[in-house]
Image (cartoon, rainbow, N blue to C red; front, top):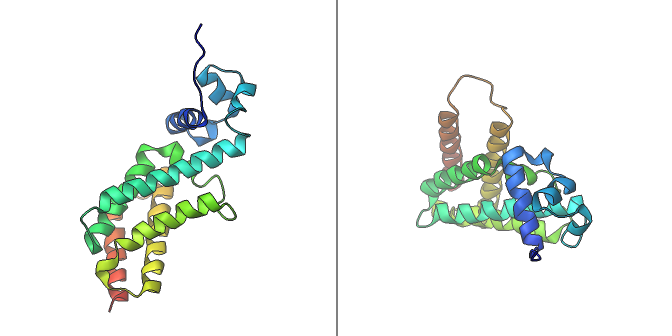
Length: 188
């Protein structure tokens, strides 16, 4: 029987698929090894431990958010960019539920690679705000606010944190309008 090639990326991708399908809480080293049809000890050639696996998923989730934000904002600025990036963020959270949930499972502080991933997201958001003619500080504050609002909405939506009957798409549209109006007010 031919030996199967395996590397850390394959392990992370497999865990990502499992997390998206069954939830981040379902991820264990044993489960990932079983899915890969290898022994759990063989998994340690590619990930140090459970925390390393979850950290890697967290990084992958943040990288996916950054990629989707860039794609959404191409050719857009100001209100149009904010709306497009908000929709892209929400799409990532909806279509990659487990991977997105992993972004909350491993702390960024003190981890240079994860901190860089978050800074990249903020920088992408900030770049799309150039059309508002904000000061550099206000641009960063507004980008952080967008990140907080988009993440908060997506997190609540994923956990059924919006129990009222109003349509969530309408609520998200209103959130975007509030954010755009607030950012425009900063530019005055």
